[in-house]
Length: 272
Image (cartoon, rainbow, N blue to C red; front, top):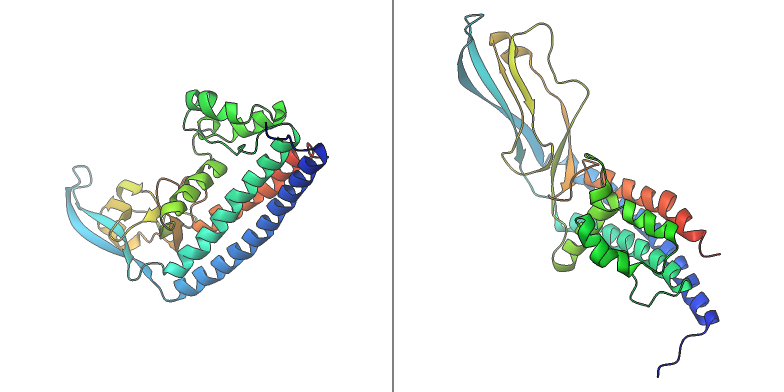
């Protein structure tokens, strides 16, 4: 029969895992800063731009004027270099591993096996059948905290940061995270003065590929001249992990802040 580890050795393992989590967080923050700097350098070369296409859209029956559909499309001159993807992957890996280190350290102190980890599930049934059993040795407050991080408990539009971090981390096991374009709309929609507008739309503005339409307008002759939408161009992670913060840099920063300011304090108080 294998010998059970002593409480002192378990305490030492947990302390080491907590220290490792904090060290990973510091390392990830440095990599995020490096990633942001290099993204800015990449963007200076104008790898992305926006062009517009005009086509007839019929005649307005009320104003009796010809309508034009203006389509604004995202264009790619140059894809993000592989070095940027390695930097993003480094940050993703260490953020995800830091979260696991916290769960492992706390779990070991409360009698969990060495196989305990931070679980994720796509729905409540799957979580109850699999994830909840993984963390049953944790204090109830921590079990509830982990359940609140699941995507099925996040309101519509909530970023579900740890769930999406886990998705990127799983992706990185087999291939590097894909970096696509992002067009973050500035304030307003670009309409100047009074103009005949029959339809105005803005499509998904992140995870953009070459030729994707990001905005359109159906308007009279004055609209063609006066519609000037404005976007800040950046890089973003590929679908389906793009809900919430729109750019890769914002996602990484938000996730680091979530772990550092919300997860670490909650778990650390059960390790003293």
